[in-house]
Length: 175
Length: 162
Image 1 (tube, each protein chain N blue to C red):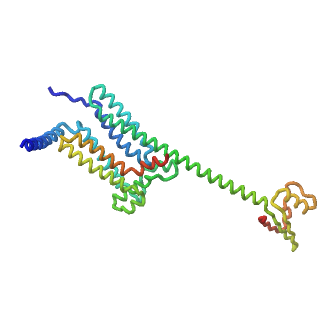
Image 2 (cartoon, rainbow over the protein chains, first blue to last red):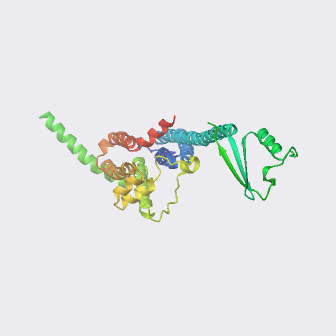
């Protein structure tokens, strides 16, 4: 009597193996490797069901096992692609932070240099010329303004009070 | 004398066995041969990849698949421009294809080789049933090596990040 070959779980195994192979190829391509986890999970499910069906009916389970192994490896590669993308994104985040730090450093240095600088203000009004030399320090400027207006200057007053005057402001770096 | 008789017997077995087995497989139907089904479907997938490359134009830039890696990280990945590269290779513009992706040609050759191998191995599988098991082992090892060689830049890219 001829032995009847039971192929239960074989079709699921074939489906799992094909899905797993396609997943494997997709997983190693970085562009689409991130979404390869979806067919990877499908392949694992198909292979698992195939193995259980084959085990129940004592039919050969080589194909679903091969599908399961390839699907697991492919899913792991896909997960590593997600991890790689995460790492690159993290590095990309760090880069602007570094630029921000550099800009802040430059800004602080410039501010520090300006604080040490001398400010020379030339005022021209109806042919009369007045030149005021002061530092960039706020207190010095207030003192100069106070001297200029004969002690009547108040907090918040500026040199621009003389609206008819033509002003030239020159910032010179202290040597 | 005995040796030559054995050789004749072996040859006859191979020939008759081949004929009987090929007929048996075709009569029983391909659905009972997982190896053939896998080969047919993989060949179909490769043909679809080539059809995709031929259908979508690099001039119009109308590719439906975009690089998820670039979208997420903002940086182009090692496989960016692969679709353009494939399309240009299909159209015979190999030099231009290299400009889009440096590894496009070797990946394309992998798929082309796999298409030929699927057909060739299926024919061998049907013609020489005695060597079916060896054929599958050779196919697995050979395809694995070709895959590693073709996709090595992409695989190395994964490890280089760690």
